[in-house]
Image (cartoon, rainbow, N blue to C red; front, side, top):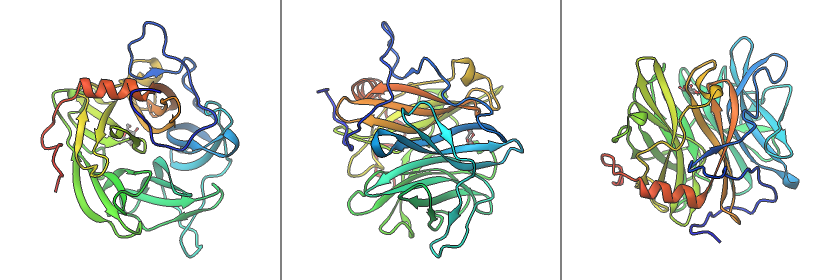
Length: 340
Ligand code: BMA
């Protein structure tokens, strides 16, 4: 038993590789990265920034961001027996509205996948007269029912919490602009019914002492419930003379009032250093969208997009991550407040 506890359903199989001897990394990379390469299926140039969950009989399933050779992002289901080798459906997800009529976005990207009770929710950046948040649910990954868009444009990086908190669903989001958004903090909203959203709160602001998150930040995978609070991995963006650089950061939010940041590492947990992270369709991007966790052992597998070109995998444990975030924590602005 480790120092800290993950609160989550048990898992039968865990994608895993031990931390290399002598390594002090908080997140260490899978030695066979990337796990999804360029041109993975006919007509698809790149799959990256994608979300996965444990599925039946110890297998894994996911919703992937795929881009066609005409460069249109859309969402596609993928399946895996080990969480590492993936096969993809030939067709994009076909969304229906609650009346059963087709409702497919012109473009869709950066999905997150969150299990709440018996439903799986997909949250993504959707075309809604400009980028905003799309929301859909499924139980079988064959039919997907789209719910009302939670926000008006412009907004990105919608991330649902994996359970209701004080009787309400909670979602993180990052208000944006219509383009590449040279600003952005993480906000929280709540809903009793997944249709009407309100009680908006500020969670975390960009900046702090590190430039790696000086321009903007955005929620990553669904927050992980732990004995210390909600462990949130997020992306932080630096503005350089050669363009944006995307790194992975970590924070711990209050378990009952997640607009309050308890700890936030002033250092990145992972930054582009490998060729597949530094070179690609968009250079210098690591963009986390999902984790698989094992509450028994405290192991965490992190799925991240690299250079907007491939899917990569990293590993950590709850003890390593929480200890690192606590020991390198700094207060940024009014992050410790309720954020009204
Ligand atoms: C963001 C999103 C991500 C992408 C990143 C870097 O605005 O579009 O999908 O990985 O830019 O290009």
